[in-house]
Figure 1 (cartoon, helix red, strand yellow):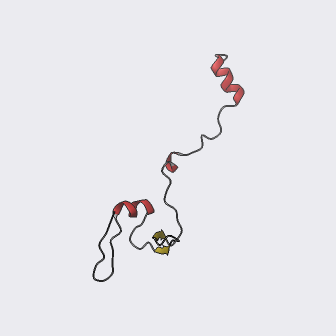
Figure 2: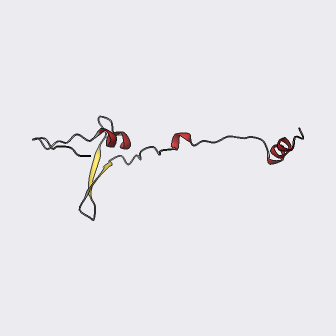
Figure 3: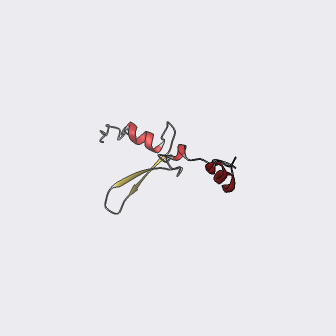
Length: 77
């Protein structure tokens, strides 16, 4: 991805990057120099983007005991 710097020194952050970082109007960002000379863009509030499968992760809650499950699989119920 690339972007063009305007005469005022402004750059539009590409939409895929904004979506990945969860950037909305008013979000503060930070620029850091990496050891290899590249510049890294991060959120200044240190919130991390949602993980890819984070929404799918959950807790089944209290369920059947192992003995009850085994009884069901054996047809003992």
